[in-house]
Structure formats: structure tokens, C-alpha cells
Length: 137
Image 1 (cartoon, helix red, strand yellow):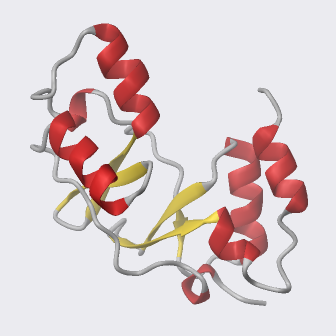
Image 2 (cartoon, rainbow, N blue to C red):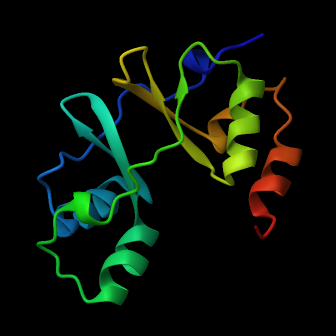
């Protein structure tokens, strides 16, 4: 059985805790992504999404100089690079997320995996996971 290490993206752009919402939005635009890990060094401390910026910041009147730590999700769902694809698909379905950071035993970020990365693997069946992710909670 394949592990997440075989399908994850290893070269992941991250934000530092002292970066601002403007920095996050620019990075997301430049990279054409909707979420970025927030790391203290390589240690994962949170995730920030374009939705977080919209709902938790703009809608609440926060400005572009607001630190990402004020609106990031700090209770992050993550997996390890030794987890099986099936285990991670289940985590994604349970948490209704399409992307999950990958950490080592010390919770240092080593990659990120998206449902699309897994879908490219012939043996992975992502239909049920996508259905579970898309169901209203």
C-alpha cells in the first residue's frame, strides 16, 4: 500500500507567524493556491485559507496589516508521511477538507497533499471521499 510520502508535494511555500494578511493574500495569488501552512521555522502551527481572510478578517473589518496568527486555524488536521493513502482519505472525509499538511514525528512540515494528488493515483478511490467532503455538515 502506498504512503502519503509517495504522492505529497514536498516543496511547500509557508507563511511565518509574523506575516500579515496582505502577505498571505499576495502569496496565495502568486502561487495560485487557496491555503498556506503557517510555520514557526518548519514547525506547523496553523493554516490560513482565502476563506479565512474573507470570513474571519474582511467581514470583521480587519486590515491587511493584521498578523496571520489572528485569523489562522491553529487546530490543524494533519497527517504523517508514513500514513497510508486510505487513512488520509478518511481524515479528509471526516474533516471535510481537500488538502492536508504532512508532518514528521516532530510536527515539522515535510509536505502537503491534496485530494487531486491522490486522485492521480490509479489505485486510490477518491469518489466517496469527495462525496463526504462535499456533504453539508
